[in-house]
Image (cartoon, rainbow, N blue to C red; front, top):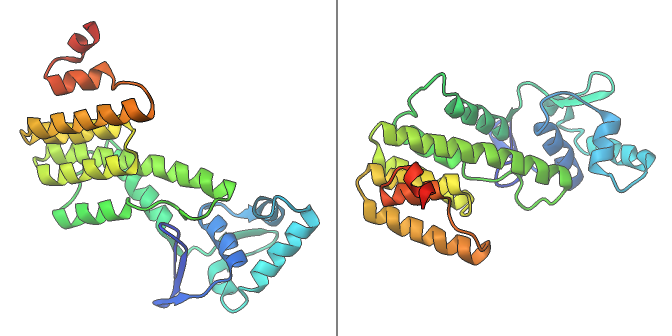
Length: 240
């Protein structure tokens, strides 16, 4: 059993996609984004916050009833709490685990073979339920997005360290695509170009970033990034 929330909602049981009503999707998605068992009244209040507690709890009961054909296979409900069963895999949990592995400096493990690095980039490429605008989804989407961008940046740095420059550039591009205004993402891409010996590509990327920052925010890149592209030490850049 597999619950996918990255890029959109999908529930797969025994290799086949399951049609889930919209209200029931919200319950499963909420449980999939929270690993600890959740009290029923809390789930109801979050998912139907605009309603009275009584009506919200009634909506939760209705959403659970609509899952009657599969409820016991996907939801654990021992008393007044709800959670997904332990054997239901959730793609968001996989992304968070892999991201934390890449960010664990103490392990300093290799990224993996080329096929694995490409698989990681694909895993990190999608937002949580991008078309959903509920406040609790928006919060979780941003939390996961921040962690996966940090992981992609770390991945690019490690690939450069292993002299896998094409993959490092690809990871840097993925980080920039996730947030073009993020200087740390731009920096790892520029560093990947420089590590490969492509100063011209690094300068073009820096110029494009300067234009983007000026147009959208009216600011300039940090002196540290400017010094990196210019081939100076950060201290020299700060002295200008």
